[in-house]
Image (cartoon, rainbow, N blue to C red; front, side, top):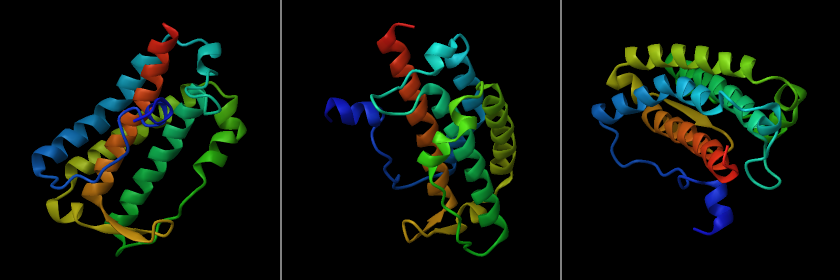
Length: 178
C-alpha cells in the first residue's frame, strides 16, 4: 500500500468477513457501543485550528469528519430500522461529500455532532443487542451498488467505518505531534 493509499485507508479497505458468528457480532456491538467515548477522548483537547486541519491533503478537516460520522451513522441506524421493519427495502443513498461541504459540517462546533453520535450509538447498541440471528439475516437493497446487503455484513462495515475514521484522526494527531 503506497503512502497516499495508506492515508486514505489507514486500516485498509473494507473486506466482507467470511463468517460473522455470534462472538464476532458481540465484538462488533461493543465497538458500536464504545465508539462515541473513544472518539470524544481522541479529540477532547483539539483547538479550532486542529479541528480545521485536513487529515489528508485536499481532504476533509477533522471537523468535517466528525460531522460526517454523525451523518453517516444516523443514516446507518435508519437503514437498519428500515431493514427490520420492511421486506428488503431500497435505501436512499446520499452524497456524503456534498453533505460534508454544507455549513453545519464546515463551521459549527463539533459538540452537536458528538451528541448526535452518542445518542445514535446508544440507540443503535440497544437495537443491535435486542436482535435475533434471524433478524441479522434481514436485508436492504443498496441502489448505488445494485446489491442486497444483510445486516451482519452491514454491521461489520460500520465497525470498519468507526475504526477507519478514528485512524484518520489518530494518525493526524500523531503526525502533527498533538
